[in-house]
Amino acid sequence: MSPFEHLPTSTTATTSKQASSTESNESDSSFPDHIQSLLTKYDVTTNGFLPEGPPLEVLPDEYYAPWEDLIRRLPESLDAGTFRAEVDRLPVLQTDRLIKEEEWRRAYVVLCFFAHGYIWGERRPSEILPAPISVPLLSVSKHLDLPPIATYASLNLWNFRCVPPLSSYLPPSPPATPASSSSSPSLTTCKTAAAKTPKVFDPTDLFRLQTLHTFTGTSSESWFYLVSVAMEAQGAYIIPIMLRALQAIGLRSETWKETTTKALRELVRCVQAVGELLERMYEGCEAMVFYHRIRPYLAGSKGMNSVGLGSRGVFYDLGPLSPDGSKKKTGEEGEEGEIVEEVQGQKRKGKWMAYRGGSNGQSSLIQFWDLVLGVEHVSAGHSSPHGHASHSSQSDTTKEKEKPFHEEVREYMPLKHRQFLSLVGKMGLGKGGIRKAVMEMVEAAEHEGRELDDKEKELQGAFTDATRALAGFRNKHLQIVARYIVIPSRQPVPEGMERRGVSLGDGEVGEGKEGQVVNLATASSGLSMQRNDDKKEEGPELTGTGGTALLPFLKQTRDETLKAGEVGR
Image 1 (cartoon, helix red, strand yellow):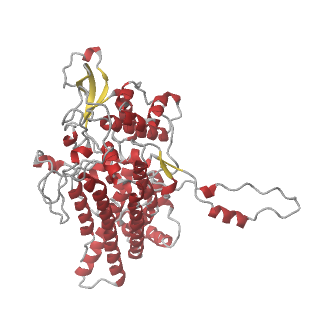
Image 2: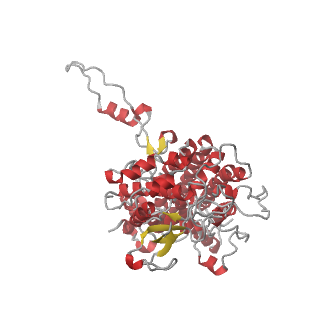
């Protein structure tokens, strides 16, 4: 029987024996085996959506040495403006020597950094991603079932190391004593010492985390990624607790209200603790460095028309045409459905692709909170809820067919994690999470013509508190966006902060004067017209790295969270 079958999602899948068994387990400190089996099946570890152990730092096969050599020098190469030329000289390596899953993940991290470095690393964005990157990246992405673009997984989940604390280095053993003396430590002493020994791999401790790779080589960029790593680790413990609550709701156990109330109270503490880590962003990440040097590299290829990329996104070059296909005209389909384009005077086959950039919206932890609570987000991210569309060229029909942003970006999460979220969304009473259970409880009391009893009031209050805590977390995110994006966008570029790079060459894209840098920072500077009263003056919106209309989208997300908590009030 699969873990899914072990963990019923509604009363129709249970028996009274199963329900009584669940009730007896609810007082235990450990979680039922089937919950642990579920987490294991979907690659949710004791660190949550982070790996159980440290990500691989170097591909072991020497065949991939050209990648490893270049990724080590990435910041220097980008700063010197030589990165594109170095990539163009790389061999097109195949992926058939990648064996373990951690090797595929490592290759994905490396190639995603290469892709964004190539696209955004010089004065104008490149619409062409050359074969040394695109061929292996498409292969790795297909294996991992992830898009061939920098994602939250490549920038954060699989891009860190955890160094041991100084206190974990034990002093030398004392000199040996005569065998006749009672010198052997007792079992109790050993257990006590082990309990005091710091955990070697502890991603919750920011000061013990280091990034494997950055674009800029700055401490600000490292800190920006590592705060998210620590947040993921900090929130890991709440996952099985909330699963137990959803299970109790689905089984309608006698103690489901108490179990759910207790879980919600703990969720409030968890969200607040993760929010405190988010606020530590200010400690190690400089706003102007982030805005002008780091953020441009995180942009995707979707919704970046104002930044120099067309609506088609980026052309992933898959190599020259075969002799039989050489007669194909530019824009026609090649042998296997690829599009023919002319690159540097040569006809090449490839694919035009447009993807959203890396975003914390791709965090499985935050979406887990939404699903558990039953918070529904409907925006596709283009505009404010008041109808000020930032993509007016799109037809209403096209917009109607688009998925909400939060649903769309699940495709940017590791496969097992998005499968896990899909399952969580069906637990309890089905779609609607804890909110649906609370709503039904309130409606039942109204139907019976009675007031909520004490336990029901506690549950209702705990649910409202949890949604307010999550909305408060999103307010903290808005404050960070204001400090790191909105305010810098209104200020002149500090001296020495301009992005370096070679001058514009033939065949590259981008608007503006010769030699002028075109990226997410330069295109956004001076465009923000947002006022403190939430009323927007006429003018373009700031764009998020995920291609969203930044402030309206984030405010709508926060407001939807608050609205979800208004059950029976």
